[in-house]
Image 1: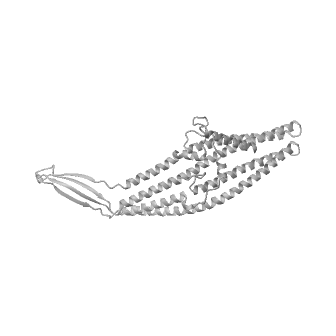
Image 2: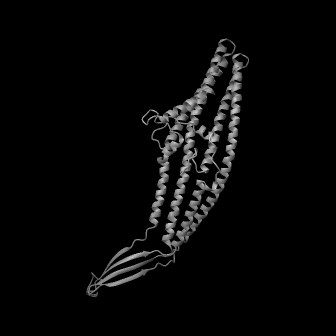
Image 3: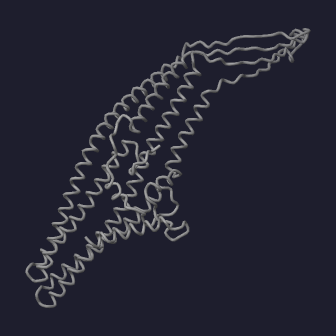
Length: 419
């Protein structure tokens, strides 16, 4: 266990030096401390996609303010044909402008729906950034967990090697059967394979962290222990679940759906087209003014289907908003209870580790003195490895509980507001 702590301190020191080195140094691929990494990740593809969605909604909102374009018409009459059967010199040319006029408050409803869509896109962006910050923190923690598993596996290999040396010495002295040495060798090979797997997992965890943060090259290490940092600080303060990013998004989407219903209802009102033109008669001395109005008759299409669909969408959004509130409230209570439980689990795990370390020390002394069989030593070493794993699992659970509470509070895992 002392070897594990020493290696953990060395990794933290190496990460600190990496963060302080110039950009062109060989440490440049080390992931910076998490708050700095989160700031750099503002240009990551995941975040850029959220910004693009907001920009798209703003473009649609700007277009919603546009009025219908007029149409220009040019008509010619009696300018060709059989003049023997048609009236001579009755050629007519008409220049006309048609202007659609929206009735029933369509433009105002469309503008309100566009603004509501922008608000929903912005809320979706905040919720997406909150989810991204949580996922980035968990990816950072996963890379750190991989480092810790390597340290644990190295301790296991070191201890298995020591056990094998003792077994060989006892076999050579005729105090143990050859079978005991074979058992110790098998145990060592198993630990070595576990160490190789831990190294491979570390490479994958660092590569995923780099990809998530938008780094073009994989990271080679971490600048800090995020798990220790999070566990050392107090959990996020009082959380109002109704103000969580998920609930705000659900309410914004509900408002956008309500505005969409209004748009469809207004759309059922027919629009008119005003017409104004100038007609020039060939035989007349001056032009004639023509005007008219086109009024569609809502006989077949009253937009009932679209209205019903929009109302159904609104009902769904209302149900999702209610579910989001209930889930946020339950999530806040669960996160607080889980934090207390995982803290207690961490204390108990460290007590178990102390007991396992002492048991392994005593079992090793007894085996070296020939007072205990190899099976007892291997059992004690397995218990020690399991206790170390429980410590790591307890820290992971404490980190996850705090990450869930921070997301509900609209904060990053280290306490910065997510906007």
